[in-house]
Length: 211
Ligand code: PRP
Image (cartoon, rainbow, N blue to C red; front, top):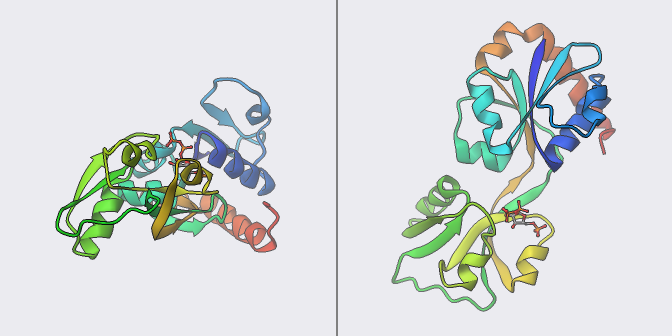
């Protein structure tokens, strides 16, 4: 049986719809309960519902053979997994944003609030800009409003959180979307299960049937 780690929440719901379209339906997934391990109707795959940031950890350690994860989580975690495919959905971008009218003091380290310290450090290191990272776990937009940071590095999807908090985008760090990842050993030893899944995913994504 193939173990597939799905991120709980919106991204996971979209991922399941895609796997369903690929021929791996799971009636249990439609029920609103608290189960975390759900076997597909034909018992070919087992869906594991995990916290989004933990998906690459389950896959790296082989607790899941494949998983679906945002590129943001993948880059931040730096886990030793194969990135197999861009699944296209969950599109947004990682941006630097600041209060409207912000003027940077180039004589001091830039104070950056973010859920993504590794991505922020890499981004500013490449620009040779000194920063002080303030790691937060949510509501990042609040930090510059209260003077906790100068800017934020965060995900922007519709842009409404920024707008409603009077922040504006200064720079785009990178585009983000959902990726299919695989455990390195599983890709070798479970080729018979993984390859057909990859082939079907490719066909469906090409046709845009998952939309
Ligand atoms: C994410 C992100 C932004 C918001 C962007 O937060 O950190 O705050 O979504 O979306 P938008 O551009 O469509 O407004 P999330 O909803 O995950 O909550 P969080 O603040 O707890 O991180």
